Figure: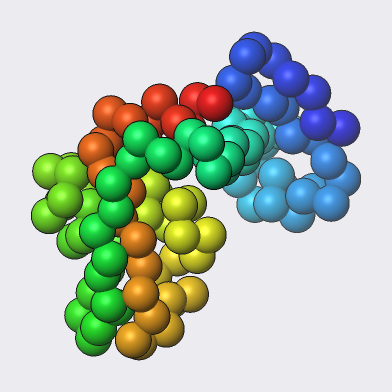
Length: 111
């Protein structure tokens, strides 16, 4: 059974994970559920600017996030916006969009 403990934490007691619980010596695992992010509608994108980037050997979302946002931990914005969840989902030569400015893309995320 999975039950919500607080606003952001769920308790997983599913039988499916019985071996994992036994290996860890626990009866359950408390964790954060996967977030559901709103993808901006066309009207919400009107206030955004974009930088086009051609994906090349050595590129990583974290490097691009650091270069354009000043924080490599914001890599997920690039993955989310381009709907390519990891670096390995981006093919060489593909053009990805880097939404700017950061404060407006974060506001659009909140919907």
